[in-house]
Image (cartoon, rainbow, N blue to C red; front, side):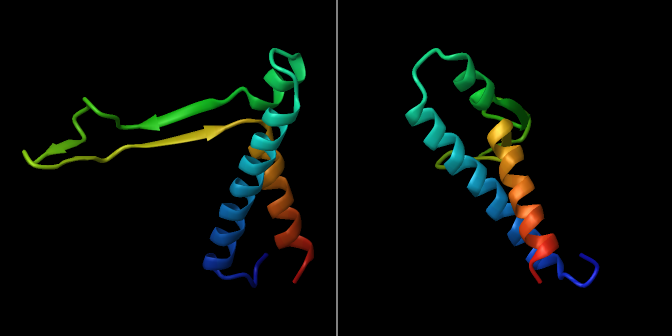
Length: 92
């Protein structure tokens, strides 16, 4: 991956996240409610940076701008990242 541009790597990581999200939504639709397998694949770990009510809120009266972000990881997103890594690594 030494010869790859940063844009291509960023696109690969973004596509891996989208693949993982689609895979998670698909598994959530197919697997029965309350199953252990569904809980394993779809349990998320949230990392949040700023939210409504925090000091990062810019309230201008007419509009309020929240400078926050939430990143959610689950097993399906890790699988999506692995697929993106494989595609970036082995297909040139």
